[in-house]
Length: 327
Image 1: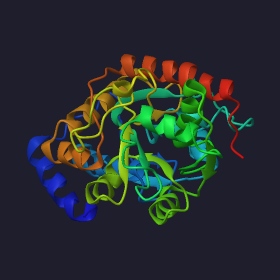
Image 2: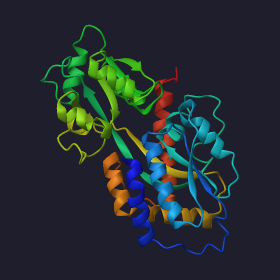
Image 3: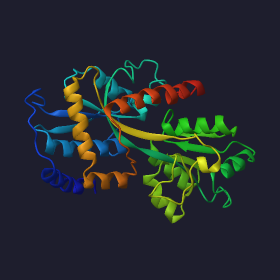
Image 4: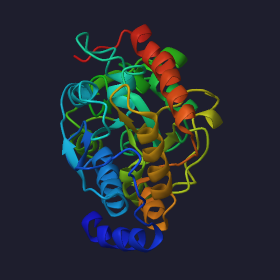
């Protein structure tokens, strides 16, 4: 579906945006790479490819996607951090390589806040807490009820995540610290095998991003307990928030952004921010973001830089405080 949409986005961009002169900086004079720290097919990869197509129509050079997965996203991020600050290597930054993974990998060779030029915020996707309806009673419909049910079990129920050290795992640890409930973490190599076991009944509870689970929730194969965002989500308005269940501040999201090596010249950073902001305003891009469940909010480059620093301090600090490891 994604590939069929690219001509639509390209056509819209060609008529909506012109090709400006960049003679003042000479940038770009060759192709630009967007490094994605996860394999093809995930939300980071899909977002990068949509924006690469749009930017290729606007800029006088091609923009390509370079997938460099590994070590919770830190391998790709480390690669970008050591590249020349010339605007030709960008990072599709997100929660993992910038916030949650650095505390888990002691040999990370970059500063996630100061070690990049943070350019633009691309949006965020909340998590959804789900249960297998054959294993968790029908009267458990919100987070308070789930916590009470789990506390009443003779052994800690298992919850699945996409992997040790993932935002799903970190949320599970934060949930236990906040509520005093005991759960058993069951890490998987990605969301797909976790969902297969959740649907099959091997685990009663699972945490995952919301969009890819909407159909399972609507069909009744899974029951949504809460979304980890401040507000209910348009794609699943019936699902309450963690705050509505009495746990204000117990939030989690996978945010996405554009970053570059440190020291990127201000004119190039400003140009990239302007181009990305214009791309995000295009109706085809906004429709694709809605399909992916990515919530947008305006941020200047300075605001995004401050946002990253706060995430590194608060969420990254929580990872350290909770004693979470990548094992």
